[in-house]
View 1 (cartoon, rainbow, N blue to C red):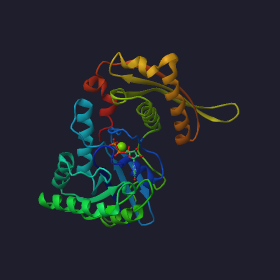
View 2: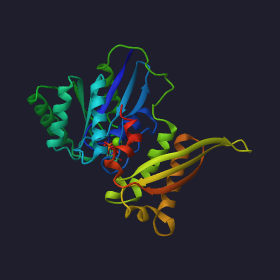
View 3: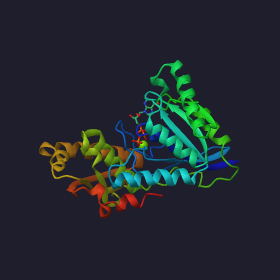
View 4: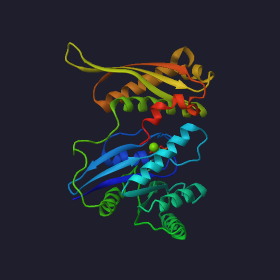
Length: 304
Ligand SMILES: Nc1nc2c(ncn2[C@@H]2O[C@H](COP(=O)(O)OP(=O)(O)OP(=O)(O)O)[C@@H](O)[C@H]2O)c(=O)[nH]1
Ligand SMILES: [Mg+2]
């Protein structure tokens, strides 16, 4: 029996959260086409007959421009320092070995952990390019004194290569019994799942810098059973934005935008938590909250 922790790291938008969700078969992390979607480490637990693999989905590595970004990057470091295996995910459709990717490789080599390279989105690239990407990345890691234990091309979208990837990960984990109850799939709370789903809808429907300047706080989340015996969650949430000018855009003309976010989020929360949901969302401005320690406490609590 094998068991252990695997940090999934890479540039924003590589498909880290998509991979973890797909492997464990439950949406623990939100996924959007916009970079810097994930803000804090989230565990996804996969229990197999021969192993238990605990994935840590991390924020995409980028150069921070505010305190929020600093905390996000601190989370990545904590994850890579604490795991048995680092799964480095590269977007095969944008494979350029740029400064950002070089820096990630140098950092993970310094951690002295076992490193597996997975090249994602191979559904979106020509086969002959895969070999070239492998060669380039392999050569670079060797030039900085490290090596990849395994290199696996995958497509999360098409579920290609995922079983091979899991076997490669398992081979590199230490011997050990199950660490978590085999029934567990994540460490994220229902409250945080609800907040993250609301944030994902804000990312989906709003443009430019607004969605990245949003934080979501669940003010109240209470369950009750109706007279008909249905389980219902009453949720009150606040979308916090960083500029006065953002608030009317989030609310929209006649409240249309906020209604859209609320309806879509309610539907997804119901699906994920498998219950009925009443959702009310307010919008508040907290000037430059993402650069203010006092407003970052709900993010700081999750950096671990
Ligand atoms: N074509 C293709 N797209 C994919 C694949 N895997 C993920 N994507 C898309 O890539 C985008 C980013 O996915 P995420 O899972 O949010 O990426 P991430 O690495 O977690 O991003 P951050 O949280 O911002 O660091 C989404 O639009 C996904 O649908 C894949 O195998 N093929
Ligand atoms: Mg993510």
